[in-house]
Amino acid sequence: MKPPAGPEEAQLPASDIRAFASSCTMHGLGHVFGPGAPPARRGLWAAAVLLALATFLYQVVGRVRYYGEFHHETALEERESRRLTFPAVTLCNVNPLRRSRLTPNDLHWAGPALLGLEPAEHAAYLRALGRPPAPPGFMPSPTFDVARLYARAGHALEDMLLDCRYRGWPCGPENFTTIFTRMGQCYTFNSGADGAELLSTPRGGMGNGLEVMLDVQQEEYLPVWRDMEETPFEVGVRVQIHTQEEPPLIDQLGFGVAPGYQTFVSCQKQQLSFLPPPWGDCSSVSLDPDFEPEAPGPLGTPSPGLSPPYSLMGCRLACESRYVARKCGCRMMHMPGSAAVCSPQQYKDCAHPALDALLRKDACRCPNPCASTRYAKELSMVRMPSRAAARYLARKHNRSEAYIEENVLALDIFFEALNYEVVEQKKAYEMSELLGDIGGQMGLFIGASLLTILEILDYLCVLGQSPGPSLLEPKAPPEAL
Image (cartoon, rainbow, N blue to C red; front, side, top):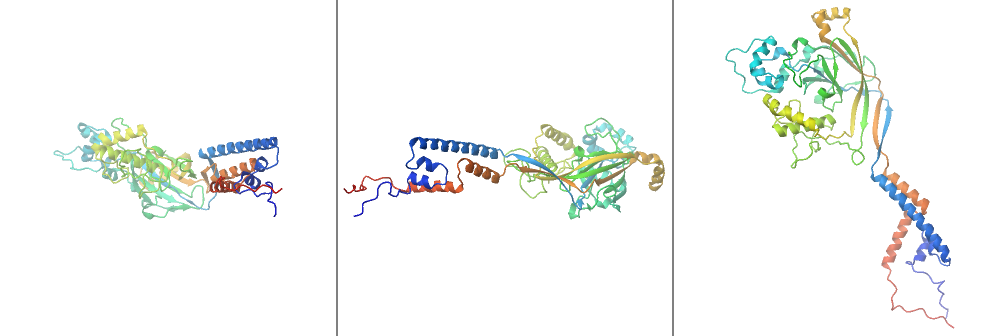
């Protein structure tokens, strides 16, 4: 009979730690658990393995913590284009209502709210307008619409626009869209409304954009009766250059153009891209001005729905519209939504105080849009008209030279060049970089890889499935003498 093999020749079970250590791809385990090594050597190897493992875990924890902080970085790039879409240009006369169009009925309804007039002052104000007083037995209309007042009594573009050209081609009032803002009735060029094709330009520089000549009609300006918050003291037009997706907020963001000057506006397009949470705080969900949450929440909380693309100005207008509609049961004429337009009395008693309170509290929380476009501007101006031009313009428009000097302005808006800036937020640390760092640290300190982790998991599964030593198992036969 062949004698049984000795212990050193016996095959170790798969669950034995020495068998696992001798075959594991993790460096150092074979020296710690391998047979025949002196205890001191095993102890040194064990200390080295534990130190390397601790260093690896420390590095991994630092990388994971850095990834969890969601850092971002900003990249600035200059790009070129063969053709750029021309922006929307909104124009507003700083005078909201024409004096020749106001009636005693308008003063009765809108005088206290819009002009600060008391009923006893209506006759004196009509005399200041050069209008006859209200006839005896005057009866105001039973209802009144503020939006219709501004549409009827606001400055008409057909009267203000003396000349219009885009890239040298003639344009006219039909190329403008009427829009209501807090300054009254305004007009937007290249708005893209009703599916109209957007204009573009293949070149930069003067003569390759919008050129308009306007008559501000100072003789139609309302007399300043008393100092109010929105009383205009200046003369001219307010202008805002914006994208077609963004509604104008011209009373806050518009720049002024004065009569007696030709103003040149050189634009440069800038595309901005921000990251959503948790890396940033941008949003791409529009705020519905008619949406009412079941539970009160932040006024600027976006809500899904069929709405135009998200923009910062659109969010602010929708937030203001919701707040005023909730407080007053109506909206101001420049606000979006389906609520009824406030009456003049509601303007005075509720809408204006509510909007001012909202702006003071800064309760509209509108994050930056994830993708937006803005236009950097450089303005310059020269006096106009010259003496020779004043005579020519006076004959052309059947006005006096003094009228031309006090009422006519020219505005030239163009791209400086077709190159544009791209400002983009990017993730500073991606998941792939985190995995690469963990793999590098794993290979550097413990000489392991992803397969090593699978080996350890496989050993633990085998160890959990194998039964422990049983007392009923027969012992090995003694060695033959």
